Image (cartoon, rainbow, N blue to C red):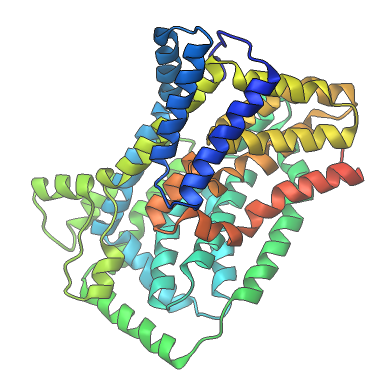
Length: 458
């Protein structure tokens, strides 16, 4: 999308006015009126069309910007479809039920949130994908929290914090490689430099989750026993059901493309399912599209296991395409370029350069809702300002991750925010206050910019 050329150069006042109007329209609609994000984003698209027509931009040009913006998200759309099928195939194979059962056996309520954070961090580091971590082990942890009657919002906050810690620090992560590549920094230099902000954020986050974790009660222990018995009754709890998880990890470590990794893991899960149940081809197709529907007769278990499928991703896909279409119009009308140029022109001090780059990454996440664009645009816009104040490139790549990568899941209409809410069923605004790692990272990167600590100069 960053390659979309602007057809006009708006005044700064106009760009600020349009941006503010879009932000208020979306945020007020979602927060005040509980609207689904689709409608206010669609209304924002109409607002941009109206502005473009007033500025004498042809309808065809505006339509092309809309289509080009949506086209930038097609790889994400296919990824979401495959993740939807992965979840349903992992359900029918027993992979997720077995993970939940193992979790009940190994994990007590004491320090539960802290354990969730640590485990998702390790999985995220291993596979380098926050969304895959959320869609697999994250779903299992939400199931455990439901059974133990624990806060789903805090559990989701721990899952998101751990998944995005792993995504940020893993050498296998797309965002980590993208950030280092844009500014020409060695990948492992970039990862080491991120440790200055990431390690304090990790430690503080872990401490907060330890503090929030509840004590076990007799009623909760009894509830867990009932769930374990119900899971055993499904006949899907076997050691061999973890094979699809092993396939996923091995292919990820082998740097197999994401779509192929998800597809092969799903295929292995379907094959595994025939070891404990007999399904026809039509039943498998139905599960892959509409999701797995548990029919044990135990309401709690059926509610826990009935999920996944390509169809479950349609809400997410529609919202991603709408958000990116709006982004395409913002680029076509020159609004994003105008704001970035204005920000860049007023930078003089090290602290202001770092704060401005962090706020730009956050602003792009809020305005467009796309993680990769927040990294790309911030990196391209601030290379020269960082050079002028004598800062090494790895400072910029760190800020791009601290305020770009980990902020995206905190925005309700962003690609990550929409996906996470759809998969684990916890609204973004509910888990946001508890996604401590994601909240702390941009604060720490700006704070270190003002103190001058941990910065590297040329």
